Amino acid sequence: MFHLHKVKTVLKTHSLDTAAIRKDFPILSRKVQGKPLVYLDNAATSQKPEEVVQAIQSYYRSYNANVHRGIHDLSEEATAAYESAREKIGSFINSKRREENIFLRNATEGINLIANTWGKKNISKGDHILLTIMEHHSNIVPWQLLAKENGATLKFVDIDDEGKLMLDQAEEMIDEGPRLLCITQMSNVLGTINPVKELIARAHDHGVTVLIDGAQSVPHIPVDLQDLDSDFFVFSGHKMLGPTGVGVVHGKRELLEEMPPFLTGGNMIKEVHMTEARWSDLPWKFEAGTPDIGGAIGLATAVEYLSSLGMKNVCALEKELTKYAMDRLIDIPGIHIYGPRDLENRCGIIAFNIDGIHAHDVSTLLNQDGVAIRAGHHCAMPLMERLKIPASVRASFYIYNTQKEIDVLVESLINAKRIFGS
Image (cartoon, rainbow, N blue to C red; front, side):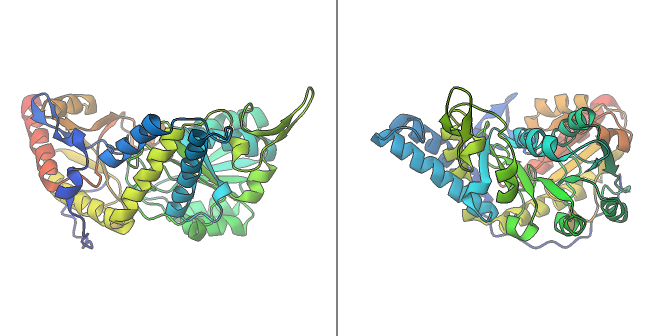
């Protein structure tokens, strides 16, 4: 938590037409509790532009068929669209090879895949896994289970009082030689952007494998996997304008080739005999059964939409919104904001509490004003324990949010204080 004072960071301006962007999102025109919707829960899931909705509808209306199996026109069209989606998404994150991008349901399933394949094969008794205290539960619990099963231990890098990773400690703990480093590129609570490129390079110098959780970063900042050089990278589609139920796990080919399959059945095999089977080539080795074809097509449309805006512009807009919100929020007496005060190291998320009002009560009152935010532990209970709080309110921004919506948020918070007499 940081002291309340005006944020003086100078930020680069963006070139996005927010008014035009908002027209692409029909849901933003609806009302909640009789008030215009102010959607500030983007870290949980983003809204979907009409283009994405239409792309999914077009698949189901025009060429709905299974992929990789049929030789009729509909199946070939569906297969072409599905594999084209893989290409587009790979280009968006600048992955080296298309076969290194595996479609799954979400980042959570991606981490579980890695833990149950690479992890079980490579992490043994006496090894340790290095995490950070700001990790989402999805990047903690799979490793807890693996550590208990294989006799490994978990260690955590701490944060400082501003919500930044303690880099000296991180470097020292990497130098100790963990078997695996698991780290989020951007915190879903603090908004902190971690210097993962530097940490990956240091880890590789010590022979440490690295998994990056990009669920919060890919929707909001430019990501270049060839530049980062992580061994594994996971993200979800629903946080970046895409549909729910589809995500991507990226892995270096040499690692994926050595890993056993996560799920088995149709589509992930070349041959099956009475007593043995041979696995399919990458990436299909890890895509058992019928995939979310429409979801992949929708996600590809989402990344095309984001690419047309330019991810540098997306990031610049969010930083402007974050700065404006911080400057307005710190004028509210009794507010406590968590995360870095240096806005160059955070993006799009502000978690806070107000003296005398529980986070859930704040959320309830904001909802009455049409403001959608998140309240709770945000699937980051170890971080809540580190901050010595049971929960927090979280406002998170995206490409369609405006300063006027932040003004509504602030006025609603002031009203909540008035109601509670705090």
